[in-house]
Image (tube, rainbow, N blue to C red; front, top):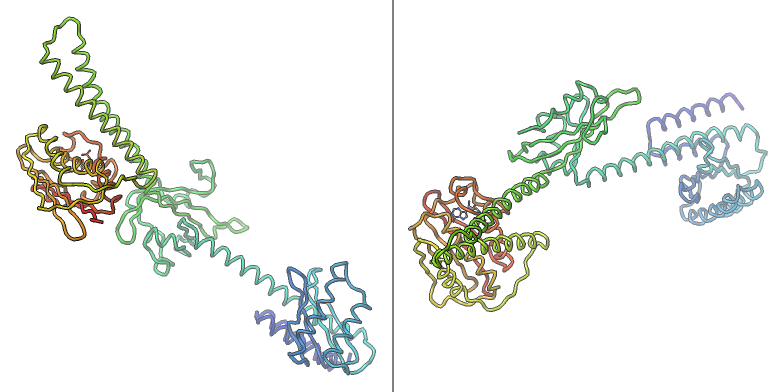
Length: 523
Ligand code: ADP
């Protein structure tokens, strides 16, 4: 090769490798490769065709001296190279005949073609083809020159493919991270936030742009922590850590997190270190799970067991006591005592039946999330009057009925609505001092009816008002501890009212009494 040509080739190669390291877009690198090849080999037309990673099909990715209209046909010809390639490669003659056909397609005056495969690490990636308008011998020099450019093109194609794969992997991880139901955050070795996902934002109330860069302890603020946090792992070294399930190298901590908005939430965090090949800590990946409802269920279960235990034991003990008294064969009971004792046994048996019924209904609601109703025209005013008549004999509270005239019939389940009214009345009787008045009333509008039960009792503290409708919830005070109850009554009341498409609410002031209202639609 002439010295000036050699210099030119070197300059081209330098320029192309610079373009590759500068991570210029692949088409631009291929365009430069093609330009260099054409100049060096005095070609008139040139193409770079790449084969598809999946099906191996060739298509033109850079071209020179060709009208864009010719591309589809050229791609078609390139496809014909596919078949013999699959069967173990094509022969020189076959390639030459195809190159001839391509040349004819572009310009029949093209006299000669030189093709060079792009190969990286033995993987065929494509073809670099130069067409000349004159016929001359193809020298070893020509082939070497073209080879040097094809090699550069192969590097660029391989880089682009790797970059594409990394990018795809990155996107996949991103999608997994963002769609994960668990919160995920990544910490730098200095424990500052590197990344957080959407679920993390939801759980902690911290937006990612605010959290990133902050020290961990500015964001993860514990209200209560059951075991030491990540700092311990860093002090002791990861290998020393053992989790409950025996897996080492991760750390699990559980506690009450103070969210950004001040609310607290029970969470569990699993930390896992990401180490470099030489064992240095690169980052820490943490998974956050909201365990509030899990904890609540656990709490509820233990409340349930102690409530049921207590509530079942008391009537059973009473029944047993009275029955064994009556059964003594050393005493002759007169009929008055027997009647009184049997009445008490009956009352307690009724209490047991009610309790079991309540428990069954509560578990049905929980399982089916709704309640089956037998809807018919229902007279709430009549139900109220009957309930008052039944309960009046059991209490010293004066009970006042206050229903509006013409109080309408509504569609409802009579048995369930009687349960609602009796539950509210029983609560008023239980939680208001004897001799204070209880009012059971009803009002209506065109669209709905409202029934209320008002008492002059101790009232319910403001922060407890919403909780009294929860399953097994009882206000923790002296009054409640003196009275029987399971904390199921209002839960069932709410479920029945809502199953009717209605709403329940309560107005209460500590010291001056409570009024429970429920509103039901008229149609
Ligand atoms: P129970 O009466 O079996 O405890 P409820 O679900 O009916 O269960 O009521 C839940 C809690 O709400 C009660 O334990 C009590 O603390 C409170 N509560 C209900 N009704 C009243 C009321 N009329 N006045 C004051 N507190 C009440």
